[in-house]
Picture 1 (tube, rainbow, N blue to C red):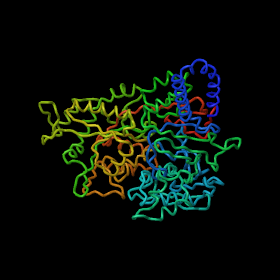
Picture 2: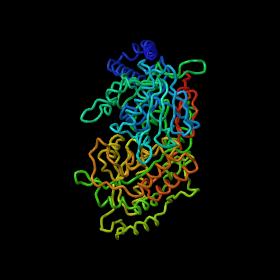
Picture 3: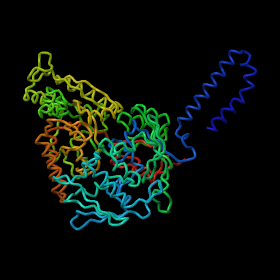
Length: 612
């Protein structure tokens, strides 16, 4: 800022003789000119304030564009992407972004028992929380037993910890201050990765909120919300929360007690500060990046790839291209037949359509996803056919027999007629009772690509005689509608993969799971339902998921998850759409970026640095 003022002052000094001899000859002319200079000065200040360097010029930092605002700062309750606690809280183990193999984090090592039902973790010595307090086995036991395994604290992750038909949790035993034994009640193949997915939280700060109840619920459920002063949140990760201004930014600064050191014994990470710059949509983030704003933009949309690629050298940034996004975009119908206070969540007329497998299959055949791939994804993407990531050894490909839905409008009409639907003389689709087939698809407004996807789906289904309306909602509002009101008709959304093991999808496929959105059971804090119906195929998928988690032989596990994937494609609760290739862009000033196939330019953030 000082440099800007010095330059501006110097320029004015040089112009004074010119003004006095020429401009001041006209008083009105001089006033107008000086007014213009003052406006220019104001703009200079504004541009300087928007420049990332002005946020902390004496410290190394990177600025990242993020859509919207976080819903919570509480790691146990956060279930949205981006993960707000990615920099602030760590688990016992982590995952290498390049190999997808587990690696030590807070735990320096672990050992399996002979029957592989017990894992003994040993914490690193001298671990501390960001407030200087010791981090030990008590914090691990508290995090798992009192938070993630606590039925009074429902979280999206909780479903992935339940084991077997009885849905029991593992036992957590403290052996000493640095050693913890996790004991599964039965064989459970995903045990290591699942325990590694839980960020460890501070017992000395949060225990009271877990034990204290308000209106019959733990105060923990409202602890560390976005209204909390971020400086008061105690962390164990590379960074701590620094400052939060809604709709503007969320900043993080280095944790002085972080455990990681480099080969020379130097403190890591190297970058002092991370700033999430809040943007309202993808267009804004793209415009700001091209104007010299954020340092990292990920993911980038297919339509932005070509333009950014041509500007790489001049803009001094690098476009990174990974593999297919390891998750899935989907469209789903609300099949919940439950009622609240005697009123159905979904109009019974429409509920009958949504619960017809022929109707769902007809919609799947009616979507021209090749056109979507070519036009909306610019050919930088591909069809998705399963919730299991393509990089997973458990993925069943179409080449190996997985059922798929190619664009086939005639097949769609054949299935609709089989289900009792008819066409009137205006080519409008009617059900057997003469009701016009029309429904609303909701999606999150911040994602411009999803809005275009819904628009094409409306066109495609219009050719089948269906009348589709579109409802674009803020992400938080949409999630609230899906999980609390539960009165939506259809949605277009996306899920992340959570990792290569299919068990990470338990929060989607178990019938009582938090993200079993197409036929969701209400959470404990929401009004309950009467008359919810769980279909036999849903129960079968749950049975296979439990069986797959219990099987320790990988070949047999593959066969189990193959069967699940075939059932899911036959019943199409999710109509899988198109995924783009994972792509991101980072400025050249960030050194050490090693972009993995599964994406995430900052997976090795502790190793990154800045060149300025």
